[in-house]
Image (cartoon, rainbow, N blue to C red):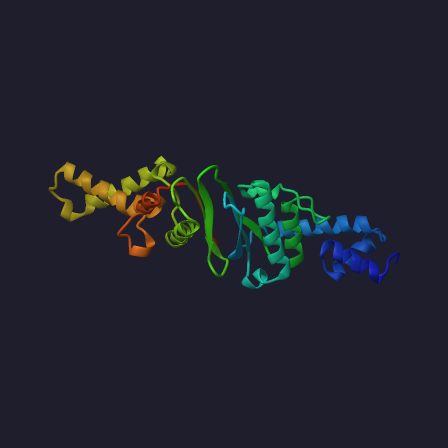
Length: 285
């Protein structure tokens, strides 16, 4: 053997791989440290590829904000099991991924994956994640990434649930909105889980499918028999507004704190603020 136990330890520190994997790599490369490190990185990448299809039912959310709250970032990294979310390696990766996203302004998973990762081993966030998967042995992925900025009046605020498994980020412009308002709105988002800010963000195909479904329901309802077409059209519109848009569109949702007596838009009006953007972070989404 052209290497010592200290070399194995050094390689372990360089790559994070197990002792036996490091020893095997050094044997295969005749003790060449750099070649062994490259071999391990390829091996970890292959392990990550094999695990890519496995379900990721756990994870952690992290948030970052500028001191003036004109910029904010939120990231969720997913894994398979809860014990992994408590490991130093995973927590460290999530924290650093959030730092990188905030520093670079990354606003999508694809964008964050390409950002530089300065640990001396992995060139990018994506490569670092693959290496982590190989070391820990679970499938992991960046679940969602958002970075919002505000110019002028307004702020970026958020809320992360105490278990760090769900959260929301909002960008509020103008008016008198405060950080408490932003947090309250984000808590509503976590509770109500909207999929769109306004109706315009929902596809015409989805609306058409729901409309056809509701028309079929009304046609089969004996209580609708004999009603004029104008009345049925009104009932159709009412159900579409309440049960479809009212559940999916954030601005039209009933406010979570008062059981829906007021709407989200009512509170934005009260704050004289506009909602520029929002993002929901949750496992399984």
